[in-house]
Length: 176
Image (spheres, rainbow, N blue to C red):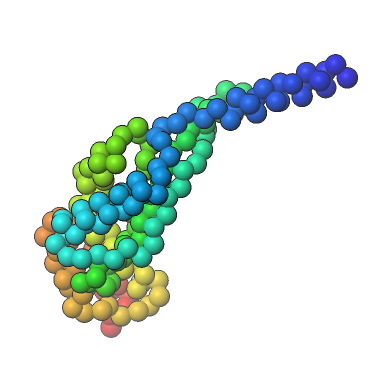
């Protein structure tokens, strides 16, 4: 019986320690989420010189544990936010893409958006073209012209040519 009590006490201690998560970033309120949303869409429109539509947006603030940061039964937990944007180019309707921004540093909203501009902004549009080619290949569809040509021309001009892998597959398997 004494052994059972010790196991229960140790279990409660471990559970109590597990609830002490390290905050990597503060939880953002609705106003801050709106600021991030507006600044990211503005950055897209300024960079690509065209309008974009936000199809869907979500923000999650949750705890997670890194399996490499575990000792015995205890794993350190961390808390941070994540923004997920689903965006569509209005001028080129084949271009849709997802942006995931991890808010895992204690930085301002402006710093968070600046990090997005530095690390993701120049490639998201062309990722939309890659996604489009994947979609038409998987569903045996025909390319929508002139939209595909416009996107290909742009992405090739900036050296973002990952789409060509899927383009080549399309040309090989869908063109007679």
